[in-house]
Image 1 (cartoon, rainbow, N blue to C red):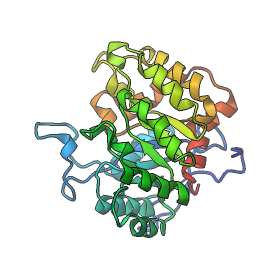
Image 2: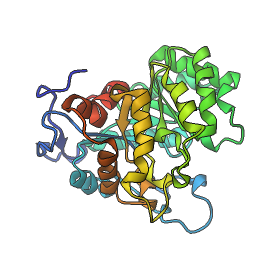
Image 3: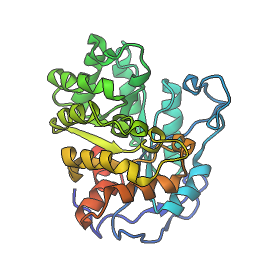
Image 4: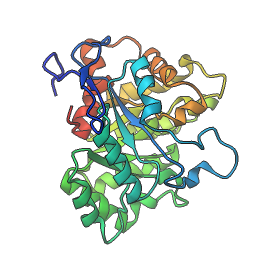
Length: 309
């Protein structure tokens, strides 16, 4: 996908309220929309998020579009992709409704029951919206590391592949070995590894993550999100240099054509601000050509998720 001055400039405005949709400033990458490929919203009055646990947590409050808008403007981000945080169709409908109301939201990645008998009907309904752009399951919280190899789940992934719907792999390093096995069974699936698979950055540990991720990168239709890193680093002590060996490896095995940037906001706030995430990624990626920068910071996400921007 060519990214140049012909790309529609990013806009601001609330569709629901009929606010004027004005062109934002050109940013540091003229003509190229900057896309945060991975952020979340939640409303704890609407849904209960079990993964938050029962103890005190700074994440146990509402995080909504009004909270994110000033942060993306400060960071120079034009559009975002909401990724599911609750395993329900209720959340899927809710985040799609947010995308329909707020122009900075370019799309959503929703949960569906991949092994359920109602998968086809659920996808039929979701695909009526142009803001339904992918599917994710919180795999890394499953008690069974091999959950994704279950026959019902494989059938569900085949249905996603048949419909051309991308899938987000939410993994820890121990799950990576299963991804090539998935592709032995579902070779046409478009997939992306979330959060570079959460290596043990705090321990400066590279293996077996590096080797297993390199095997995954051999699959041409799998991408990787440069996201979710600072929460895996030393809390309160991390610095961008800590991320560099991991980002360097990801670049070496995937290349700039298969990487996309994501914030993992608001989870990232456990370790740093929204702007710090993007500043750290810029430093860890190092000097990029204009073409590589356009792809990593927006073009690859637009193409992968078929975002209407």
